[in-house]
Image 1 (tube, rainbow, N blue to C red):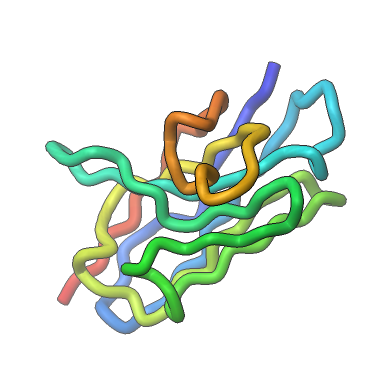
Image 2 (cartoon, helix red, strand yellow; image 1 turned 135 degrees about the horizontal axis):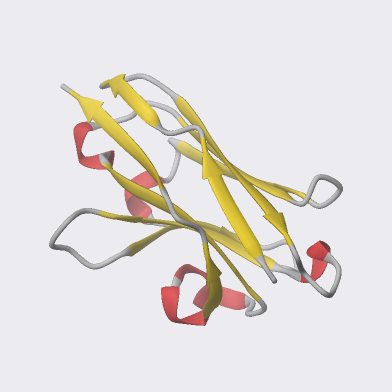
Length: 126
């Protein structure tokens, strides 16, 4: 049974930094063959893709976070990370990690992911 557990959320002031982690387990195949993504959702709005790393090593960022966020995947530790810098109040959201098998630009789309974590809250104050 695949499990994804996020951690690292919290409250920071604008301009600050946070590092989110996602511990993955339960895959019946190598974690290196898994595409992983970070998504976020604000109440009343649709969930949006933030950053993703494909099983082919490709990385995609949403335009709103380019240059500020950095995604990384540690296959040895079966973990995913999101380093967030220069945070803005509009980055406030529940952040989720997700796992799937797609590659290409689709990895920033939530419909390609089969597994989801419970989320970790990020709050950025002005």
